[in-house]
Amino acid sequence: MPEKISDIADIARNLAEVKAAIARAAAKVPRAAADVRLIAVSKGHDADAAQACLAAGHRLFAENRVQEAETKWPALKERFADARLHLIGPLQTNKAAAAVRLFDAIETLDRPRLAEALARHMDEIGRRVDCFVQVNTGNEPQKAGIAPAETDAFVRLCRDDYKLPIVGLMCIPPVDEEPALHFALLREIAKRNNLTELSMGMSSDYEIAVEFGATFVRVGTAIFGAREYPVVS
Image (cartoon, rainbow, N blue to C red; front, side, top):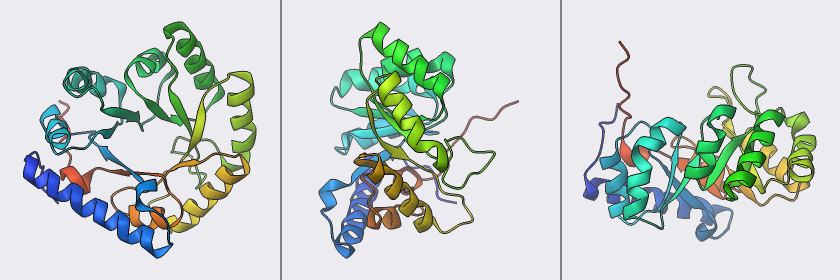
């Protein structure tokens, strides 16, 4: 397993390698590599690792949990005001207000109750946050996300009833299936809903995602190395 990485030079090298791979994948289609934005997934890594990535010039990040982001990012954003942070993990409704305050995009909108909570808190706080609808492309019962067959109606609900800024779709394909099939499905759902942003592809499959139209790819291990989670006693 890769070791944890926090050295600025190592992270800068890894960033360059990932960006080069994105460019090669884009050239195959072809499409402009600049149309693909790299999200550095700092979940499970400490603030030092995120700061090293910031020092290397990167500004777009993602976290999986509101509580973890709250411990790292307020101070980092004070130092790097142009940093942008996405939420890519499941969001509980009781954390919706905190998410609206801290994140610049929420990629895991997947149910009406959460849509209502986000809309209410955006109005109360006076801050609009880009939203992606998470689609459970594999219809996996253990995984968050709305079913593909229900996505069109849910997008309409979020737009028309809750007036949420829906900008795109997100998916996490099943680990034991060909990701290209799921990326193609997400692309088609986005097209018929006039959504331009596609968040798809992680360290193991982001190059495939680029070929299928990803506008955001979420890469953690290939940049930071293995995650270090706290031991729960």
